[in-house]
Image (cartoon, rainbow, N blue to C red; front, side):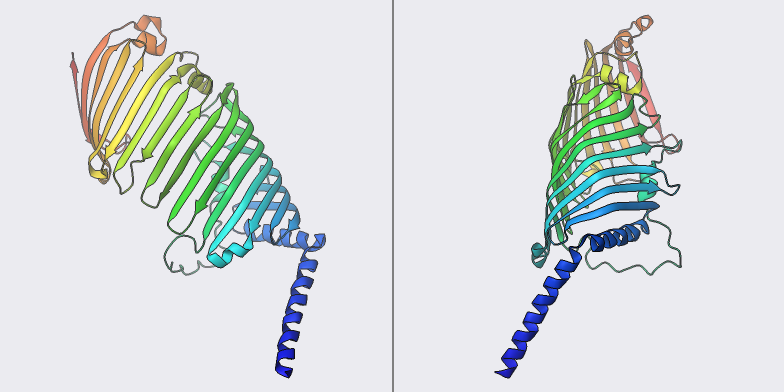
Amino acid sequence: MRRKLKRMAVCVAIVCGLLGLCAYVARDPVRDVLGRTASAWLSRRLNGTLEIGALRGSLWSSLVLRDVVLRDRAGLEVAHLDEVRLGYDLTTLFTKRLVVQHVHFVHPQATLMQDPEGQWNLSRILSPAAPAGPPAAPERAAGGGLPIALVVEHVQIQDGHIALHTAALPGVQQLTGLQVHLQGQVDGREFRFQVHQMSGRATPAEVVLQTAQGTLEGNATTVRLTDLRLQTAQTLVTAAGTLPGGNQPASLTLQLQPFDMAELGRLLQREDMAGPVHLTLTAQGPPEALAVRGQLSAEDSRVDLHGQLNTRAMPWRYSSSLELAHVNLATLLHQEPLQSDLNLQAHIEGAGLTPGTWHGAARLATV
């Protein structure tokens, strides 16, 4: 009897202790200390700093992070979020899964800059910070991947804004009105992300992304697209299938039906690009014998591509033929002096994709 009473007393003490801990942690000053501790821990792993202005909500089921700021090493603000709202279920950890019901980013703002070498400021910040002491011994991975499955049921980005500084897209200086709805799942072996809706406006080009939808899933060796659809006012891009580059056979179909060259011209700030083009591209087969077929047409011009690649070889090896039928450069380039009716066949064999690594042979013939 005395032993049972002692066990009951211990249980009551544990419950009271947990309740007291919950009440203590629920106080705003304590949560602010936890927020500063989390900021410091994350900042040590970045080439920059992460600041959390305030931490509110329940640590056990829902959190609200306010005034989240990401800065680079120089202290310049790279990203700012008014709020990050999280909802999750910690009891799912008993099944080796963490279920996050929702992640809501409220009014995120970012400034992305690309230097002349092509590196982005955000990638520099997110690259691991150099350790202060001697490098730690590498940890032996038990099986690779995450120890638990991470399931995010709903991600929403509300009224996002990005300032973009890159010479590659001079017509895109601001991305405004970003709205994103997606969900995802990641475990030790596979991942799956589904985009339900994405929209935004690029200025000064005034190109509006009306919708982006589709599913991206796979593992370390294979990536698949399902029902990818990107649509602007004048352009429609669809894609589906297994992407090339992995260990499994590819089966990809990409279509631009149509693709508005005027929209691309505004993104590049080139006034000589206009008119619709249509493109169908397929990639089928194993990595060592990947068959690529494509057809590009614009008004009365047509370009056909047939080729085979060995993506297992280093560098890649390829053999392809290109046929131009009634190609009018004046129509494609909008340069009246270039009136033409080109009918050519080209055959290319070689290896490498960059000027420094490419070697091969090309043959031209008129038809």
